[in-house]
Length: 418
Image (tube, rainbow, N blue to C red; front, side, top):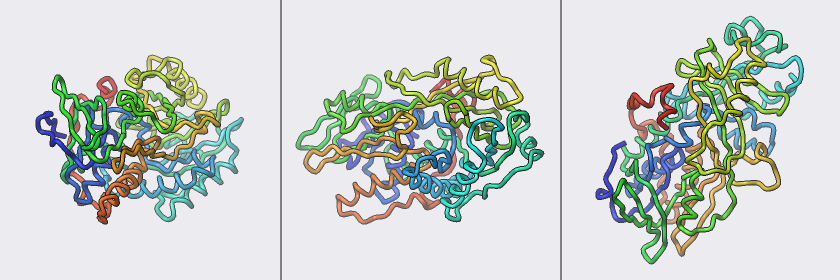
């Protein structure tokens, strides 16, 4: 994206999007694909550098969400989007086989795993990347030689997608820019007020400040969403909660398939994945209530991942094996009646109305289904103008060509920069 000075901003846009993560970039891309040009995305760092660069790198329906029937529609949506993204960006969204081992002691019984995988295939509705199957031990250990043979009694194989989340987010933003949207990196939205001109947003870029006005605001700041609302003296419609997920990167452990592992003690699912010449392990799941800018991996989270891996793998890891660690935050609408793990992964979009001017705030949402969420918001906006144009982000010609990342954003040094 081109860094723009504040002086190049228009004084007014129809839509200003706060936050250059996957959802902010996605809304801009959707609107631009309908022919809208007066759309501005504001990102205080570089596109995709926040939560969107710190996921588990999966494009998936979410097999583990099938534990809750309320999330079945979310899984089906994710599987539909997975199939589409593999076609739209095949260089960065690729199928990956997974091994789901059956433990000898504890864990989910084989019949329950079988039911879950059958449901996963059924919900893909013919868009599967490959149907699940029972895997003989020889093939399992060929795909994942680090599995501890003494721990497991059988293995299933299924398929999902894997990506580079930072590259994907930047591709989406570049696509929006190609179609006429304005992308402003290194620009912070300080606060917002409302008057007869609509929403007035104060932007800061270095020592320079500027004010832009707009009719629609999309607050896609994720974990920073309420910080902006508080600075603007706007009361949030719902309470939010940050779900912190820590990951570690270790050397290449020889995996050809990803591992979908279950921890019997706390019923958590975690992944061990081949990724860009390394092995990615994650994730933890903890409530984080500190400042979003200060969220970092904690030693007990890193040790948790090492300890869980060492129960299931023949290769025993230590703290010295950790090349990099990183934490992402999933911003959810809090459910006071359930714990963190039970908080629904379905997204929520709240509205603040000032006459006919609207601010949308996004809670939740998945990397995989970002396009569907973006379309939902864009539909609300364009219909208010009597615009009947349709989203075209599902068309290949609406996407930008690949661009190389800056060298300092490669792996593994990336997470020291973001």
